[in-house]
Structures are given as C-alpha cells and as structure tokens.
Length: 206
Image (cartoon, helix red, strand yellow):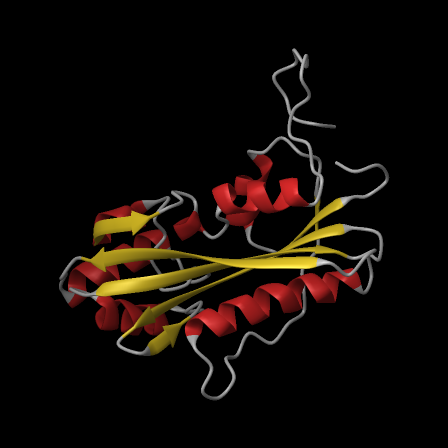
C-alpha cells in the first residue's frame, strides 16, 4: 500500500470481504448508503458502473485520505435488470425468469483515490446458463441456500452452482461479486504493491 493511505472496501457484502481478503492486504470495511435503483432508460452496464462509483464516492466523504473500492453487480435477462431479491418470493420470480436461459451478470468495480479524486471503473461480464428446473426444485434450493442478498439469487460459491448449466467469464471470481483479476490490475495502477522481491513471508504487503 502507498504510505499512510488506508484501503477501504465500500461494501457490506461478506462475499466481497472474503474475496478481498485473499489478496493479503490490510483493509477495512465501510457500508455505503446508496440508492441502488436503476435510472429510467439506463442499461444494466451503466447502472452497475454508476453504482460502483457512487458507493466509492459516498465512502470518500468520510474517508478523505483512503483508497476506496466500490462494487456493484446486476443480472440481465430478457431485457430486465435483476438485483438482490431480498426475500423468497422475489427470488423465486427471478429464478423462474432465468431458468433455461443465458443470463448476463455485470460485476462492476471502481477504485477511487479520495485524496486526488482519481478513479477507475471497469465492468466484468459473466454469461451463465441456468438449468430448466421446476418450481419445486427452485423453491427447495432457495429454502436451503437463502441467497436473497445475491444478484439473480444464484450463489455460485455455494449450492447455487447446482442450478447452473454453464458459466463463461474471464474472471472466476466475478460471479461471486468482486472480480479479483481486474481489481488487482486496477490496484496496481494506483501503486499498490502485493509482494516485495525478497519477501520470504509468503504474505502480501503490510
């Protein structure tokens, strides 16, 4: 990390926190208070990128010296945007819309230097084909997994993998919500060092 500049993940998602922890960087977490509703006529790509930036900007207001990561994820099927379901009934409706179809997941990232106001945004696309399962199967899955805080209600890192037939992406972590391949390059562009030459600890920068 750059001297005296903390790294903050602007997300309350435990899945993103676990993923960022894999990079062995010290970081803290702050929850952004951002309305995630799409704007009229806004594409899923534009919504995801806008929200990732907005979340980082919100955290920057109270952490003016930090390097901040914002993230957002949306699913798109038949021209309809799908975010977090929030409850069982909504999740079942989402999966009913998705079954037997290819779903486009937009996993957007923003890295914002609150000191300089410099930012980068990027979207990583995952194409996932959902199995053509019955209502009873979908409902049973939801009762077990309860993925109501996941876009499209498909928690691929858990039992959700069983409802998917095919997944295509440049980044295996994108569908979980934090594309680490893209993020590590973005952090490098902001001067973050992940390991020092000659460092024998096997851990990242501290």
